[in-house]
Picture 1 (cartoon, rainbow, N blue to C red):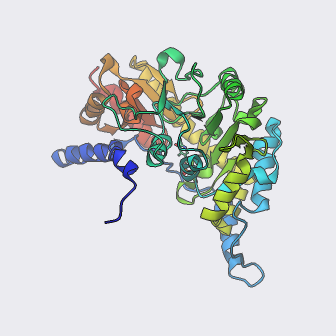
Picture 2 (cartoon, rainbow, N blue to C red):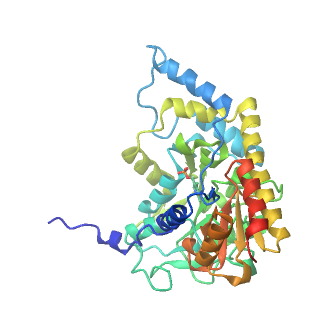
Picture 3 (tube, protein in one colour):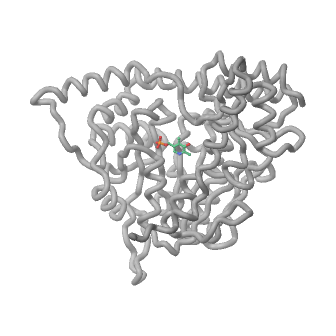
Length: 411
Ligand SMILES: *Cc1c(COP(=O)(O)O)cnc(C)c1O
């Protein structure tokens, strides 16, 4: 028989969301009357903005004409979209990018998962804990770790605990890393990296010749003007960082699929002979070999996010979710529950009352208030004793959920 990639067998069977599904189903079967409200999922609920739909419709019509037909486009994305990205997302923040530094793709999950393959399998990789599982699992698949340990860590991977004590913003470690994944605003903790914290990481990366993989999928939810939206707002970051951005949460593209990755020309790695190699050239080679571009109508839809109407409509949706976040945050605070995040991110990260285990609190919330959230321990060992609630829900449901928690949860 053909040998498989046995690194896949080190992976923990997708446990978190299947287990949530199992417990909710069991509860629903025993309590068919219960009206369960789900605040556990990291997916948007509001429909796409009219400006986006209109641009996509026009592009579809164009595709049906001889003059307007588009076949394969540039793998890296059309210039109309790349120009819009550079001029709207970066130039106003004082960041100058060249067109060949932006790679349009069908998602940040793929990009943040695929990026590791242009680096050596012996690279020392760090993630924050709790963490978006994609960063960890893709390195496991590539053989960059050893076995899964009872502690909840993979052997050979460096975990940087993010907790209350460090404001969920772990500082750079003493040891030398080759690659570090940072996510700000953070999924799941809702924390953001301040300018100082980000500068400490950029300085660390420059001193230690480390590359930062910066996931900014939630940058649009930042309201505090002091918090950087891009790592390139920090001086010198173009020599040490790759940035991932997505239209998924910003503009409701989770079902439409469009994202982009910035790989600056000045970012360098070294080959086996110790010679300096352009990371941009490597990523371009990978992207063109394995990806054939995002469809023309979807790129037109993404471009429409930057029109004045598009911007206004998208901002309205973001504000809607952030009002939900406020409702959740303040509602829980009233009950004396300690909450984090939810001010510059659509996630509320709460300390479980009485220090309950994450899964125990999950069961309590489900049985007493009929609300589904996500146990913090599912995102890593340091998430134990915490719990994630998502602001991606309909306002009426979120309001009702909080009222129910206030009335029914026995604290
Ligand atoms: C939702 C999310 C993304 C975006 O993923 P897409 O594949 O672009 O939909 C990226 N990173 C994190 C941490 C996320 O939660």
